[in-house]
Amino acid sequence: MTKVSIIIPLHNAESFIREAIDSCLNQTYTNIEVIVVENGSNDGSWEVLKTIKNKRVKCFQIAKSNAAAARNFGYLKSSGDYINFLDADDVISKHKIELQMEALIKAPEGFIASCPWGKFSNIIHEAVFKEQSVWRVKDPVDWCTTSWNGGGMMIPGCWLLPKTLILKADFWNEDLTLNDDGEFMCRVLLSSKGNVFVDKARVYYRQVPNSLSKNNTSFKAANSLLTSFELYEKHVLQIDNSLRVKKSLATNYLTFIYEYYPKFSDLTNRAKIKCENLKLDSNPIIGGTTFKKIASIFGFYNAIWLTGKLKF
Image (cartoon, rainbow, N blue to C red):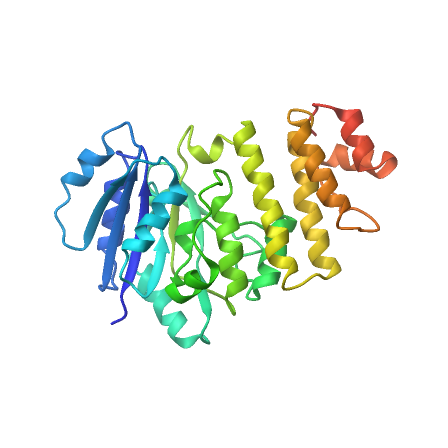
């Protein structure tokens, strides 16, 4: 039986990590190792790990408080032929790995697998699954452009990835803090032959107050997001430089400007230049209903200037 490595970066999740690990150990697919990498926690996360006595669970500590660094460290310690990156506060359904492995065995070589994910706060049975347009898209470039055009996303735990494709795509970018998962999966997707969506597998995404994913208003986070958009452009245009791809890249830049102007004018000016360099005849329409009406009359950048800090 092919081995699967589940890699969990752990930072200040002492209340949730045991449930995450248990969901991995309870998989119907049995040839699994769980690699937990604690990175800079200031709670009792490491103490919880020390109470877990299971030979399939390997625990490590690194000094760098960075999820991407923890995932890279865990990847280097892994021995599986397939990799599943799982966040420390999320949970996977017991058939998740088995169903995805079955799907990948049937799929052409070079495919990756994904699955539905639903949000919950305390009990996974209360999770709400809301299908997003991107979920069932097979083609890698189509998957990326659908996501960039507002078609949704996939959380890290949903993906089951052949190690060969990660080797081809390269490690997680440790310089990114926000959207490091989006940038990593863009590279993996573009290195793959396609995505097989496994309906009956499930990942439960825990909504935690004041989680890192919600703290995206700092300059560091905004710069990371814009850098990830610039890297999207670098990756995808090497494969497809069509008009539809350029428009989806422009959507990223314009959405960034819409969200962060005028708070970070240097960053929004950088995004504006990147968008202009795509040399589109017209920009995609983004923003709320009222903003779109103003932009239709005065143009996007004039609408940004006119509305200032107001959100529509």
